Length: 311
Image (tube, rainbow, N blue to C red; front, side, top):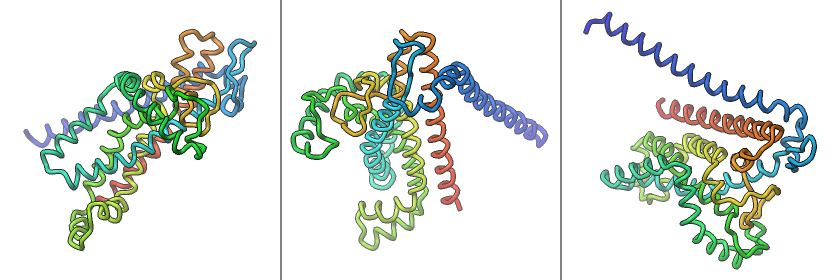
């Protein structure tokens, strides 16, 4: 193959790649424009109160639609998922990269990738039929022994459908994302630093805490934010395991009430009037923009971390 043929192939590949990139960005903007047009009625009538208010009433005329309780629920479930997923993901990533034998490392990586490929509905069904019976007993233990802490205080005997259970479900879904990014970033840490720490008598835990994590912290933070973006937009799994109650539940994680924006859209859309559909589209705009901002920040952090390690 001569130089001219290689140059033509490179130009063709560049053109196809550029077209694909612009097509993807066009799709994102097209979705945003579609949602904005369909939701304009709600934003014009409700104004800022759509985000800050706490009433969702489709029976009145013209209807009152305000989103704050679901935004609070979205953030609560996402934060609970991160609290569970982040330590687990970082530990698994360190184990795969530095502790496991090569064969075990390959198997563990394949299993993590398989977990990432599971559809949301499968994890939701798993949470509904497998996780909930166990999580309810965990909730009872927490409320019995740690009920003096406001987070674990509850007036209900059964925690089925509580944010605590939804947080566990979300954690299962975002562990592969955070683990994959963390493992990739940890793999770029200078091996001589790790060897020096071990030679000075450092344990695996101290090496991870004092050498690996400080060096790779920007990339790990980016992976955490990517996981947060997935958690914010999760729909079907949360719909299965969380009891949708339109009431602000700020911190009572064991009480069976809450919700998130995505599950609200799923629950209301089938029987919604034209006015309520506009409100649900507006909720989609808010969630879309919030998730987009989180993902953009995460991507920026990961790219900056990779550039630092490469230099």
